[in-house]
Image 1 (cartoon, rainbow, N blue to C red):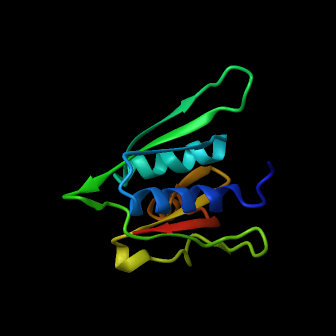
Image 2: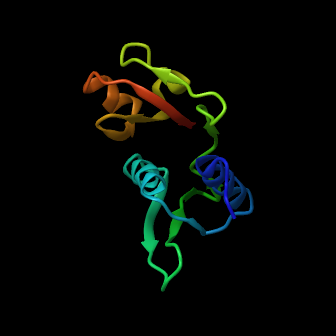
Length: 132
């Protein structure tokens, strides 16, 4: 099955799993999805993730979700740049998410990083999603 927006599918699966209070979510893996999961882990939005190599099949990405007193740590995760409309931003004009309380995940020439790291390195790129 071919997905037209695999990153949008990943975000939808994360949202749906947290609404149902699942401990983990399993989805088809890619290097880009693993890098997004790594940013979420480093910023404290998820507990951990791992890539499970299946015999002959495509690998799976297993994400362990994080909760704070029963409520999900990720209150909002929203796709910004979509396949039909890509959103790019320079380092100076990167958005602040909820006055700096949230993060934007940016795909830059130097890799996938948060908006804060992109501003520090003075590099812009495609805004993948907003997390708060």
